[in-house]
Amino acid sequence: MGMTDDEVAIHDQLNSLRVQVKSIEYSKVVLIGDIILDRYIHGYANNLNSNAPVPVLRETHREEDVGGAAHVARGLISMGVETHLFGVVGDDRAGISIFESLADEGVESTGIAIVKGITTTVKNRLLATRESLVSEEQLLLRWDIEGDEEIPSEAIKALFEEAKVHLDKATAVIISDYGQGVIVEEGVKTIIEAAAQNNIPVIADPKLTGLHHTHGVDWVIFQANGLELMRRRLGIESGDEAAHLLIQNHDWKHLVVVCGAAGVTIYSADGSSVHAECTLTDLRQMIGLVDAAVVAIAVAISEKLSVSHTAQLVNAACECILAASSSDSFVLNRNDLVDRIGEMAWNLQVSKR
Image (cartoon, rainbow, N blue to C red):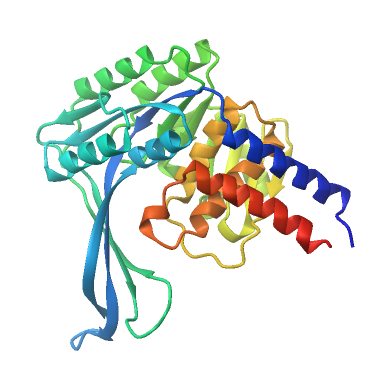
C-alpha cells in the first residue's frame, strides 16, 4: 500500500525541512523575558518514608542549567541564530551560575541586568527511578525558590530600551513571560510597536493571566491544557472555537497549540487551521516543550516557511523534547532536530510499503 496524496505532501515537506534546517540562513532574534535557573536532582526512590506515604530519594547527582528565556536562547544558539537576550537576575549564587552557564554556551549576556536585592528564581526538580529496575526517570516533585521583591521600574525600562536598540536586522522578537516581573505592560507595548514599525514578527510565550500583554502579536504559543482552560473561561464548547475567538480578541495572526501526544495545531486569523500529528509512541517527558516550539517558530520565520511547513517543524522540535531521556536533552539542538525530521520522513515512507 502506497502513501496517500496527503502523506506524500507531508513526506516532501519533511525532506524539504531537513535540508533547510541543516543550512539555516543568517537570522537574528531579540529575546526578552524572565531568566530562571533550573536545578535537576537525580536519585533512587527505593523506599517510602516511615512517617508519611511519600518516597525517599537517595540523591546520586545533581545538575544546574539555565531556564526560562535563557533556555530558549540556548536553543536558538544551537540552531545558528544570532541571539540577543534581555532579562534580570539577582546578585546571588544562582544569578552568577546563570552567567557562567551562558558564557560556556556562547550566549551573549550583556543584555542581562544584575539587580541587587533581587532573588533569582530557581526551579528545583526531583527525578528518580528504582535502583533495581531498568526504567526511565520520573519527575517526583518540583519546588521553586522565588523572591517577593519587585524589579525596579527603572531597570525594566532600561531593559526594553536596550532591546529596541538591537532590533536592526532582527528577523524576530520573542517575549518569554514566566510571571517573574520582567514582562510588564508598558515595556511590552513599546517593543511590540517598535517591532511592527520595522516589520519584525513577534512571538509570545505568555502566562494565561498576561494575555493583555500580547495584543497585536504575530505568533502566540499555548499548551493544550492552556487552551482548554481558556475555553472554559470563555464558555465555549470547542477548543477550535476558543482558539479563533482568542485570535480575534487579541489581534493575533497565529495561535500555536502544542499537545504532546496529540501533535501540534496552528490556528490562523483567516479562520484556517493546520495540524501535524505526533509520530512518537513512547513519550518520556515534557520539560522544555514550549521552549522548543518557540525556537522552531523563530527558525520558521527566518526561513519564510508556510504555516503548514511551520506546523511540521514545530512538531518535530516537540518530538525531540518528548523523546528526551536525560536533562541534557531538554534543550533543542540542530543535530537532534535534523535527525528527528529525517526519521519522521523515513517512518512515514516505510509504514506505507
